[in-house]
Amino acid sequence: MQLREVGPRDGLQNEQQVLPVETRLELIRRLAGTGLRRIEAASFVNPERVPQMAGAEEVAAGLDSGDGILYTGLALNERGYDRLRETGLGEVSFALAATETFSQRNAGASVEDSVAAGERIVSRAPEDGIRSSVTISVAFGCPFEGPVDPDRVVALAERVVAAGPDELVLADTIGVATPTQARRLLERVGALGAPVGGHFHNTRNTGFANAYAALEAGVSLLDASVGGLGGCPFAPKATGNVATEDLVYLLEGEGVATGVDLDRLIEVPQWLEELLGRQLEGYVYRAGPFRTRA
Image 1 (cartoon, rainbow, N blue to C red):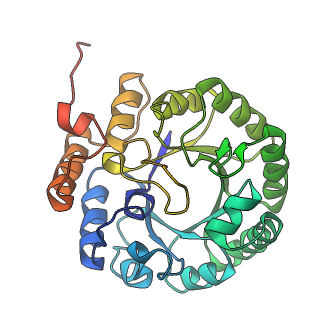
Image 2 (image 1 turned 45 degrees about the horizontal axis):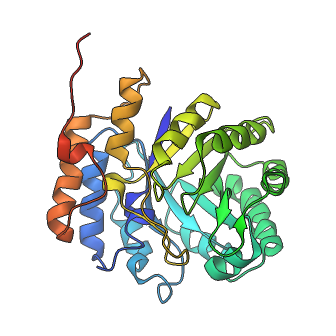
């Protein structure tokens, strides 16, 4: 099971406090020291709309390219991809929405235009030596249009998979899914043939149950955010992602190897708590690990 740490991007984009580039790089360095092998480091979006993500190029320039970690950048369009391509990051995470209203609010484009842009980016990425991961956001529910028809998501996934990405991820952006919904939709999308991942927010306290259901559905990737940070500036009432340290505790306890040093990982949200001046949403960093008998 691969984990992709999204705290430096998805986690920080909804914070009121705008952290400077050097602080964001320090967060990434601390995460890299825990054994995490995939980290979403930056977002190549308009800094006027998401000021927390300003300085994406500076963040990318400050990364250690020789540490064996796959660093990811988010892009919502080809302008963002062009910026990312110039930085040398190893992976683009392209996000498109399952509903028209959220697509317009989040990316300023229709679903059709976003799918077309995604197809072009997926086509270009191999030539640029960049891995492509495509996320379908609001795959289970939209803050503006309500429940999303699973058939619609599968139809979008079919188009994405046909373009040939390295990975397809379904995101429960506002945390409305339940485990059976998550498992059934991920199984349908997984049958299309591409590696599939899950991205769950814990807004209604179902995120970890959904992550476990995704594991049962055969996903190869789960996104998580240190301390449970996260949310979307364009999704009212959306709260954080599943906390990375909580997810590692769950997976390791179930016999699923993550390669992450939980003790070192717990130190990161403890540091963040002091930095941000508030208690974070995660639990394990406060309660501590528990070593069961063999």
